[in-house]
Length: 540
Image (cartoon, rainbow, N blue to C red; front, side):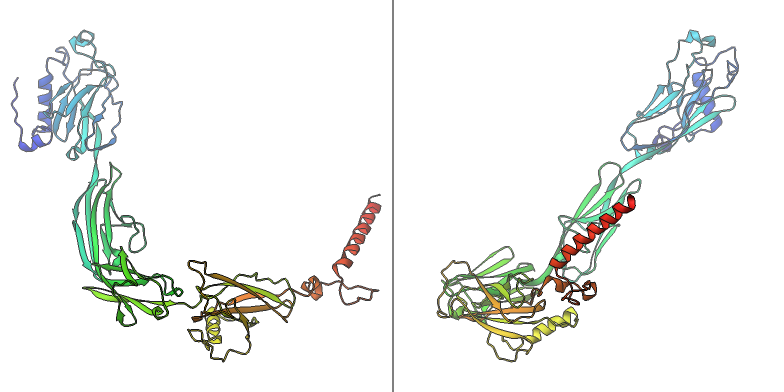
């Protein structure tokens, strides 16, 4: 018996599936196998041992990465004269040991050794715990779906294996490529789309930096910068990951164009006559800015005394052999096509604000030795020391700072005293080491820190005080120090005991005055002895 059949183009795409009906399928299969697996003495659908076989392997789902090899098992309980076929939809892939599909990636694997034909009934080979597995190599996404192992008994039985093909994440669209230039204040929207199985998740990061929002990464297909500034520039990375293989990544470079922004390294630069001073401005700009230095309103050029240089965004003005006329206000002006900005620096020879270095808890009851240091390139001529009892009323931090400012508002920035200091502050004038020689300069490059101490007399015991210090050299008065708090020692240790906690003494000239530590110690020992005696008598 000869049966003719044809392939359609769609069937070829589906691993050589036959475009025939279900009934025609088994006619074809039985025709192919007739005379090889059938016993002429038996009905072709008869079970030789009388008990229909059943499947040993259950149907299950296989999750396989694209490009891998999968083996779909199909084992049965006993041999017989039946046909075991693999199908996908209505397409027959195998019939018994015969591969029907032309797909070269498919292969039939016997699940057990096939015995010799002589051992079967009528020369039909028996499957010892038989069955056939289906091997599929180089799995592709289009191979996903259901695969059916069908047993051709009188009532066909089947198991279904589901193949799910895992596909690594792949980015197939990014909104920008290369470098994107935006102007400061503009909104930037970046988009990244990816495919894969399972559906990949998309995240955004920035190379060697956190995101503009401060987060390390942001999840989602889009990344939006509402108002771009210089902190938004950098290389952004879109990453797609679904746990299959390595994540896929794409990069977008964002370059933000903005006017210069200037920061000064030090608002006030302290120097001395004959020394070298360096004034530094940090300039951020895109594109790069042109930087010009000024003293007051005069533009400075490169001379023997003044030189300028820059490394990266650091711009430096060097003044050699500083003289008195070099003291004053300087500025660096940075400009590009988007705008300009200015940084201001004061070059001065006055001392810095002193730093109090003594301990806050005094060792004396009625006096306190304050020690401080100050940086100055010339000898200090004199100090002003201010102190007062610490106010007992409570104030907010802002109010406290405002009061401290108002207390010394009568002192000009250049240190010239104008009077009018609040009366609760006591001021003392203390000569400095350069009092008799105000014009003597310290040798360069000598250490500029100068130390001083002074003992304040006639203080109250166990009292909290506030202290501030100001220094003057040949260039004028420096800034006043922050408030320093100190406390004098109490009269005696017993004053630290609350009156209610002091035991009364009877039959003593110190009645009502409390006990000293020398009086308490013997009483405590005697009391302990009495208690011990009482305990001993009770126990015996």
